[in-house]
Every structure is written in C-alpha cells, then in structure tokens.
Length: 108
Image 1 (cartoon, helix red, strand yellow):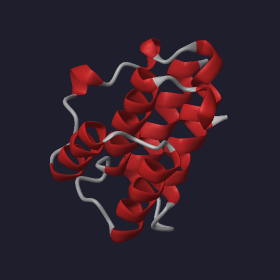
Image 2: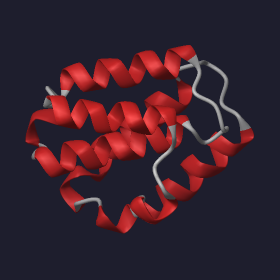
Image 3: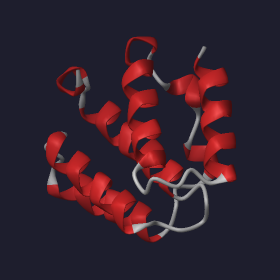
Image 4: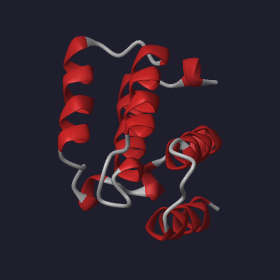
C-alpha cells in the first residue's frame, strides 16, 4: 500500500510518524529504527531523508500536522504507521495513547 503514495504524501506520512515518535517528548532507539526502516521502504530522495532527520532532531510544528489533510484513501496507511511507531518501543506512554486516540477520531 505504501507504493500508492506520491512524493508529497510520503513526506506527509513521515511528518506524522515523526510527530507521533515525539509524543512522549523523546525518541526511543526502537522508534528511531522504525523511522529509518520507513525511509528505506518509501525510497525517499536525499532531500526528503534530510527533512525526516531534521524531524527526528526536532519534532514537526503542530500546524504542520493536520489529520484533515490526509487523503481519505490513505488514512488506514497513516493510522497503521503511527500505531507502529508509537508501539515500536513496547511502551505506549499516556501521551502516545492520547495522541493515537485523537488521531483515530479525527480520521473517521
């Protein structure tokens, strides 16, 4: 399903993934590993990879994260990906649970 995303949608997905990785205000090693795996799976261009690495260093701004902008046909892909990154460290923090719950609501 990831192959159905265009360039802007792939970067948008990574923005959401990084945002959710930052939900508890820190990036855990397993979350970082997940992000790097997604970079490879999505075949991001060098400038896109640089942007994702910047989001790992500092989270995307809240105004850059709008679930309403996620295309309807890709909402399951986005939800699955953010659930995976949130659970990557096997420790779903309260902030992560709340963010996931809100994201689910906004996508439906």
